[in-house]
Image (cartoon, rainbow over all chains, first blue to last red; front, side):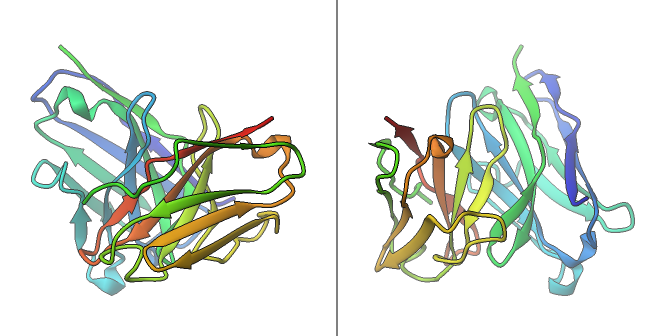
Length: 119
Length: 110
């Protein structure tokens, strides 16, 4: 079964860091770009960023709202994508999702992990 | 990058058709045929309904269709069913190699 599972969410104080993981199974992880998204409580979806597959350089792109604070990486040997979040703000409170990218769309999504930034 | 503009809500009776618009700019929707649509029910992850403007993934009913004209993309649900009640989001690739979502539309089946 093709599946993505996010983990690592929780309660963190403003200014601190947190790393989320997205563990894939059921497909050849290294063949795909992987994206991260978030959804603040009661709000819409926001694209956070993505990491390209190694075939396309493994490079990353980010939304302006997180650029310079968040870093996306991947470990193809473990089929895991990571979202390193630094200098967290209360505005970063959201459910964070990862997805598989295919043909400029997102076809497989994880169940999400909640990140709460609060003192 | 500003969010794409969608109507906050649309509604229709079972069997009717509803259309959701998604307006962007020449830097996103207007530049590429890389618009996708997602359905999200409360407490669940989004589900891909349409990719590359008008293509349906396997398993998505053919009552869902997509189109684009200029800077505006549209999702039409024909033969509306109770199970179609959800939030819908459009998404577009941009000229900055990023992605942007629409503001979201709540579909209500009367």
